[in-house]
Length: 328
Image 1 (cartoon, rainbow, N blue to C red):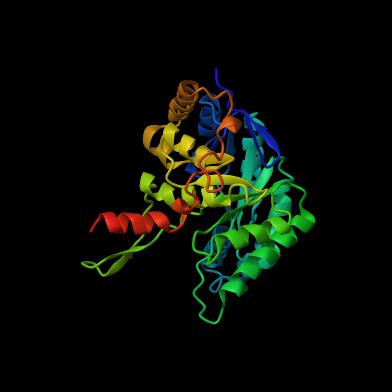
Image 2: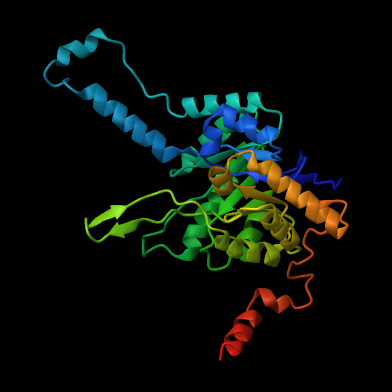
Protein backbone atom coordinates (compact mmCIF):
# COMPACT_ATOMS: atom_id res chain seq x y z
CA UNK A 1 0.00 0.00 0.00
CA UNK A 2 1.23 3.50 -0.86
CA UNK A 3 2.83 5.51 1.94
CA UNK A 4 0.99 8.84 2.35
CA UNK A 5 2.95 10.13 5.35
CA UNK A 6 4.39 13.63 5.27
CA UNK A 7 5.54 16.42 7.58
CA UNK A 8 3.87 19.81 7.99
CA UNK A 9 5.09 22.59 10.30
CA UNK A 10 7.64 20.12 11.57
CA UNK A 11 4.86 17.77 12.72
CA UNK A 12 4.61 14.22 11.32
CA UNK A 13 1.28 13.54 9.57
CA UNK A 14 0.04 10.14 8.42
CA UNK A 15 -1.19 11.77 5.21
CA UNK A 16 -1.35 15.25 3.61
CA UNK A 17 -5.15 15.61 3.89
CA UNK A 18 -5.91 18.32 6.46
CA UNK A 19 -9.38 19.46 7.55
CA UNK A 20 -9.40 23.23 7.12
CA UNK A 21 -10.67 25.69 9.72
CA UNK A 22 -14.45 25.41 9.51
CA UNK A 23 -17.63 24.60 11.40
CA UNK A 24 -16.53 20.95 11.47
CA UNK A 25 -14.35 21.77 14.48
CA UNK A 26 -17.33 23.24 16.35
CA UNK A 27 -18.36 19.77 17.55
CA UNK A 28 -16.13 17.20 19.21
CA UNK A 29 -17.96 14.29 17.63
CA UNK A 30 -17.28 15.74 14.17
CA UNK A 31 -13.59 16.16 14.98
CA UNK A 32 -13.44 12.53 16.14
CA UNK A 33 -15.28 11.48 13.00
CA UNK A 34 -12.66 13.27 10.89
CA UNK A 35 -9.89 11.44 12.71
CA UNK A 36 -11.66 8.09 12.30
CA UNK A 37 -12.12 8.79 8.57
CA UNK A 38 -8.36 9.24 8.24
CA UNK A 39 -7.65 12.98 8.38
CA UNK A 40 -3.95 13.74 8.66
CA UNK A 41 -4.61 16.79 10.83
CA UNK A 42 -7.24 19.42 11.60
CA UNK A 43 -7.25 23.21 11.90
CA UNK A 44 -9.66 24.48 14.56
CA UNK A 45 -12.04 27.26 13.62
CA UNK A 46 -10.47 30.71 14.11
CA UNK A 47 -10.50 32.68 17.29
CA UNK A 48 -11.96 35.97 15.99
CA UNK A 49 -11.15 39.04 18.08
CA UNK A 50 -14.03 40.93 16.44
CA UNK A 51 -16.52 38.29 17.60
CA UNK A 52 -15.20 38.57 21.16
CA UNK A 53 -15.59 42.34 21.01
CA UNK A 54 -19.13 42.02 19.65
CA UNK A 55 -20.12 39.55 22.38
CA UNK A 56 -18.65 41.83 25.02
CA UNK A 57 -20.61 44.84 23.77
CA UNK A 58 -23.80 42.78 23.63
CA UNK A 59 -23.33 41.62 27.23
CA UNK A 60 -22.73 45.18 28.39
CA UNK A 61 -25.90 46.33 26.62
CA UNK A 62 -27.95 43.58 28.28
CA UNK A 63 -26.57 44.34 31.74
CA UNK A 64 -27.24 48.05 31.35
CA UNK A 65 -30.98 47.62 30.67
CA UNK A 66 -32.92 49.37 33.43
CA UNK A 67 -29.80 50.66 35.17
CA UNK A 68 -30.82 54.29 34.68
CA UNK A 69 -34.14 53.77 36.44
CA UNK A 70 -32.76 51.73 39.33
CA UNK A 71 -29.14 52.81 39.59
CA UNK A 72 -28.84 51.89 43.26
CA UNK A 73 -29.88 48.29 42.53
CA UNK A 74 -26.66 47.64 40.61
CA UNK A 75 -24.72 47.72 43.90
CA UNK A 76 -26.63 44.68 45.18
CA UNK A 77 -24.92 42.30 42.73
CA UNK A 78 -21.26 41.47 42.07
CA UNK A 79 -19.69 42.98 38.98
CA UNK A 80 -19.80 40.82 35.87
CA UNK A 81 -17.11 40.86 33.23
CA UNK A 82 -16.95 39.22 29.83
CA UNK A 83 -14.74 36.15 29.72
CA UNK A 84 -12.92 37.27 26.59
CA UNK A 85 -11.35 34.34 24.75
CA UNK A 86 -11.81 31.85 27.62
CA UNK A 87 -14.67 29.94 25.98
CA UNK A 88 -12.77 29.49 22.72
CA UNK A 89 -9.57 28.52 24.52
CA UNK A 90 -11.46 25.95 26.58
CA UNK A 91 -12.89 24.51 23.36
CA UNK A 92 -9.43 24.30 21.79
CA UNK A 93 -8.14 22.43 24.86
CA UNK A 94 -11.05 19.98 24.74
CA UNK A 95 -10.50 19.37 21.04
CA UNK A 96 -6.79 18.78 21.57
CA UNK A 97 -7.53 16.26 24.33
CA UNK A 98 -10.23 14.46 22.33
CA UNK A 99 -8.05 13.25 19.45
CA UNK A 100 -4.51 12.04 18.84
CA UNK A 101 -4.05 13.47 15.33
CA UNK A 102 -2.18 16.81 15.05
CA UNK A 103 -4.39 19.81 15.76
CA UNK A 104 -3.59 23.40 14.77
CA UNK A 105 -5.20 26.54 16.15
CA UNK A 106 -6.26 29.49 13.99
CA UNK A 107 -6.28 33.16 14.92
CA UNK A 108 -7.76 36.31 13.41
CA UNK A 109 -7.28 39.54 15.35
CA UNK A 110 -7.62 43.23 14.47
CA UNK A 111 -5.53 45.11 17.04
CA UNK A 112 -1.71 44.70 17.19
CA UNK A 113 -1.50 43.72 20.86
CA UNK A 114 -4.33 41.20 20.55
CA UNK A 115 -2.47 39.11 17.99
CA UNK A 116 0.32 38.42 20.46
CA UNK A 117 -1.97 38.08 23.48
CA UNK A 118 -4.25 35.50 21.87
CA UNK A 119 -1.38 33.67 20.19
CA UNK A 120 0.26 33.12 23.59
CA UNK A 121 -3.02 31.89 25.06
CA UNK A 122 -3.60 29.48 22.16
CA UNK A 123 -0.05 28.16 22.53
CA UNK A 124 -0.87 27.15 26.10
CA UNK A 125 -3.72 24.87 24.97
CA UNK A 126 -1.35 22.18 23.73
CA UNK A 127 -1.97 22.57 19.99
CA UNK A 128 0.74 21.50 17.56
CA UNK A 129 0.96 24.76 15.63
CA UNK A 130 -0.73 28.07 14.90
CA UNK A 131 -2.30 29.34 11.68
CA UNK A 132 -2.49 33.13 11.34
CA UNK A 133 -5.72 33.86 9.49
CA UNK A 134 -4.74 37.27 8.13
CA UNK A 135 -8.12 38.42 6.82
CA UNK A 136 -8.09 42.10 5.91
CA UNK A 137 -9.98 44.16 3.33
CA UNK A 138 -7.95 47.38 2.86
CA UNK A 139 -10.26 50.34 2.21
CA UNK A 140 -8.08 53.30 3.23
CA UNK A 141 -6.80 54.95 0.02
CA UNK A 142 -3.98 56.57 1.99
CA UNK A 143 -2.46 53.18 2.79
CA UNK A 144 -0.04 51.77 0.24
CA UNK A 145 0.50 48.12 -0.57
CA UNK A 146 3.78 48.38 1.32
CA UNK A 147 1.98 49.69 4.40
CA UNK A 148 -0.41 46.74 4.41
CA UNK A 149 2.37 44.20 3.94
CA UNK A 150 4.47 45.83 6.66
CA UNK A 151 1.58 45.46 9.11
CA UNK A 152 1.52 41.71 8.39
CA UNK A 153 5.27 41.42 8.93
CA UNK A 154 5.10 43.30 12.23
CA UNK A 155 2.30 41.00 13.45
CA UNK A 156 4.35 37.94 12.52
CA UNK A 157 7.47 39.32 14.21
CA UNK A 158 5.58 40.07 17.42
CA UNK A 159 4.09 36.56 17.54
CA UNK A 160 7.38 34.83 16.75
CA UNK A 161 9.04 36.79 19.55
CA UNK A 162 6.57 35.45 22.13
CA UNK A 163 5.43 32.05 20.86
CA UNK A 164 7.59 29.02 20.08
CA UNK A 165 4.88 27.14 18.16
CA UNK A 166 5.48 26.61 14.43
CA UNK A 167 3.61 29.30 12.50
CA UNK A 168 1.64 29.18 9.25
CA UNK A 169 0.25 32.32 7.63
CA UNK A 170 -2.94 32.11 5.59
CA UNK A 171 -2.59 34.67 2.81
CA UNK A 172 -4.90 36.52 0.47
CA UNK A 173 -4.41 36.01 -3.30
CA UNK A 174 -4.64 39.76 -3.87
CA UNK A 175 -1.11 40.89 -3.08
CA UNK A 176 0.75 42.64 -5.88
CA UNK A 177 3.58 40.12 -5.49
CA UNK A 178 2.57 37.02 -3.51
CA UNK A 179 6.01 35.50 -4.13
CA UNK A 180 7.72 38.46 -2.46
CA UNK A 181 5.35 38.31 0.52
CA UNK A 182 6.15 34.62 0.97
CA UNK A 183 9.88 35.44 0.73
CA UNK A 184 9.55 38.13 3.42
CA UNK A 185 7.61 35.77 5.70
CA UNK A 186 10.31 33.13 5.30
CA UNK A 187 12.93 35.71 6.37
CA UNK A 188 10.90 36.29 9.54
CA UNK A 189 10.88 32.64 10.58
CA UNK A 190 7.43 31.54 9.41
CA UNK A 191 7.31 27.79 8.76
CA UNK A 192 4.41 27.59 6.26
CA UNK A 193 1.98 29.56 4.13
CA UNK A 194 -1.61 28.60 3.34
CA UNK A 195 -2.74 29.57 -0.16
CA UNK A 196 -5.25 31.10 -0.14
CA UNK A 197 -7.69 32.71 2.27
CA UNK A 198 -11.18 32.57 0.78
CA UNK A 199 -13.03 35.84 1.32
CA UNK A 200 -16.82 35.66 1.49
CA UNK A 201 -18.24 38.39 -0.73
CA UNK A 202 -21.53 40.22 -0.05
CA UNK A 203 -24.17 40.33 -2.76
CA UNK A 204 -26.94 42.87 -3.47
CA UNK A 205 -30.66 42.14 -3.74
CA UNK A 206 -31.98 44.75 -6.24
CA UNK A 207 -35.62 44.06 -5.36
CA UNK A 208 -35.24 44.58 -1.61
CA UNK A 209 -32.33 47.00 -2.08
CA UNK A 210 -30.37 45.31 0.68
CA UNK A 211 -27.07 43.56 1.11
CA UNK A 212 -27.16 39.78 1.13
CA UNK A 213 -24.58 37.78 3.07
CA UNK A 214 -24.53 34.01 2.79
CA UNK A 215 -22.10 31.16 3.26
CA UNK A 216 -21.30 29.76 -0.18
CA UNK A 217 -19.22 26.61 -0.37
CA UNK A 218 -16.20 26.57 -2.64
CA UNK A 219 -16.32 25.45 -6.25
CA UNK A 220 -13.66 23.19 -7.83
CA UNK A 221 -12.80 25.93 -10.34
CA UNK A 222 -11.51 28.05 -7.43
CA UNK A 223 -8.64 25.62 -6.97
CA UNK A 224 -6.81 26.89 -10.04
CA UNK A 225 -5.48 30.07 -8.41
CA UNK A 226 -3.81 28.40 -5.39
CA UNK A 227 -2.72 25.49 -7.61
CA UNK A 228 -0.86 27.89 -9.88
CA UNK A 229 0.88 29.68 -7.04
CA UNK A 230 1.87 26.45 -5.32
CA UNK A 231 3.49 25.37 -8.59
CA UNK A 232 5.25 28.73 -8.95
CA UNK A 233 6.57 28.76 -5.39
CA UNK A 234 7.67 25.13 -5.11
CA UNK A 235 11.47 24.99 -5.06
CA UNK A 236 11.71 28.75 -4.56
CA UNK A 237 10.95 28.74 -0.85
CA UNK A 238 11.80 26.45 2.05
CA UNK A 239 8.37 27.02 3.58
CA UNK A 240 5.73 24.31 3.67
CA UNK A 241 3.00 25.05 1.15
CA UNK A 242 -0.61 24.30 2.12
CA UNK A 243 -3.16 24.43 -0.68
CA UNK A 244 -6.58 25.68 0.39
CA UNK A 245 -9.81 26.35 -1.57
CA UNK A 246 -11.66 24.36 -4.20
CA UNK A 247 -10.38 20.88 -3.26
CA UNK A 248 -13.28 18.46 -3.62
CA UNK A 249 -11.91 15.03 -4.60
CA UNK A 250 -8.95 12.76 -4.05
CA UNK A 251 -7.75 13.63 -7.55
CA UNK A 252 -7.79 17.30 -6.55
CA UNK A 253 -5.43 16.43 -3.69
CA UNK A 254 -3.18 14.66 -6.20
CA UNK A 255 -3.14 17.81 -8.34
CA UNK A 256 -2.05 19.86 -5.35
CA UNK A 257 0.76 17.42 -4.53
CA UNK A 258 1.94 17.33 -8.15
CA UNK A 259 2.12 21.13 -8.08
CA UNK A 260 4.24 20.99 -4.92
CA UNK A 261 1.85 21.25 -1.97
CA UNK A 262 3.06 19.90 1.35
CA UNK A 263 -0.52 19.39 2.51
CA UNK A 264 -3.97 20.06 1.07
CA UNK A 265 -6.77 21.53 3.19
CA UNK A 266 -10.43 20.61 2.67
CA UNK A 267 -13.74 21.72 4.16
CA UNK A 268 -16.49 22.43 1.61
CA UNK A 269 -16.48 18.92 0.17
CA UNK A 270 -16.87 17.47 3.67
CA UNK A 271 -19.79 19.77 4.39
CA UNK A 272 -21.37 18.65 1.09
CA UNK A 273 -20.58 14.94 1.15
CA UNK A 274 -20.15 14.24 4.86
CA UNK A 275 -17.02 13.89 6.94
CA UNK A 276 -16.59 10.13 6.18
CA UNK A 277 -15.92 11.21 2.56
CA UNK A 278 -12.34 11.77 3.75
CA UNK A 279 -11.79 8.01 3.55
CA UNK A 280 -12.99 7.98 -0.06
CA UNK A 281 -10.57 10.78 -0.94
CA UNK A 282 -7.68 8.94 0.69
CA UNK A 283 -8.56 5.73 -1.15
CA UNK A 284 -8.60 7.64 -4.45
CA UNK A 285 -5.12 9.01 -3.72
CA UNK A 286 -3.79 5.55 -2.84
CA UNK A 287 -5.33 3.99 -5.94
CA UNK A 288 -3.83 6.67 -8.16
CA UNK A 289 -0.39 6.19 -6.60
CA UNK A 290 -0.63 2.42 -7.05
CA UNK A 291 -1.62 2.86 -10.71
CA UNK A 292 1.33 5.19 -11.30
CA UNK A 293 3.80 3.09 -9.30
CA UNK A 294 4.55 5.70 -6.62
CA UNK A 295 5.52 4.40 -3.20
CA UNK A 296 5.30 7.73 -1.33
CA UNK A 297 4.03 11.27 -1.87
CA UNK A 298 7.64 12.47 -1.96
CA UNK A 299 8.07 10.50 -5.19
CA UNK A 300 5.84 12.86 -7.13
CA UNK A 301 5.46 16.02 -5.02
CA UNK A 302 6.33 19.03 -7.21
CA UNK A 303 6.66 16.93 -10.38
CA UNK A 304 4.49 19.44 -12.22
CA UNK A 305 5.79 22.57 -10.52
CA UNK A 306 7.13 25.35 -12.72
CA UNK A 307 10.73 24.38 -11.99
CA UNK A 308 10.21 20.82 -13.20
CA UNK A 309 7.79 20.95 -16.15
CA UNK A 310 9.02 20.97 -19.76
CA UNK A 311 7.34 24.33 -20.42
CA UNK A 312 7.96 26.53 -17.34
CA UNK A 313 6.16 29.46 -18.94
CA UNK A 314 2.89 27.49 -18.91
CA UNK A 315 2.31 28.81 -15.39
CA UNK A 316 2.80 32.41 -16.50
CA UNK A 317 1.65 33.84 -19.85
CA UNK A 318 2.38 31.39 -22.66
CA UNK A 319 -0.84 29.42 -22.19
CA UNK A 320 -2.80 32.68 -22.31
CA UNK A 321 -1.33 33.64 -25.67
CA UNK A 322 -1.72 30.10 -27.01
CA UNK A 323 -5.39 29.85 -26.03
CA UNK A 324 -6.23 33.25 -27.50
CA UNK A 325 -4.49 32.37 -30.75
CA UNK A 326 -6.32 29.04 -31.05
CA UNK A 327 -9.67 30.75 -30.52
CA UNK A 328 -9.28 32.93 -33.63
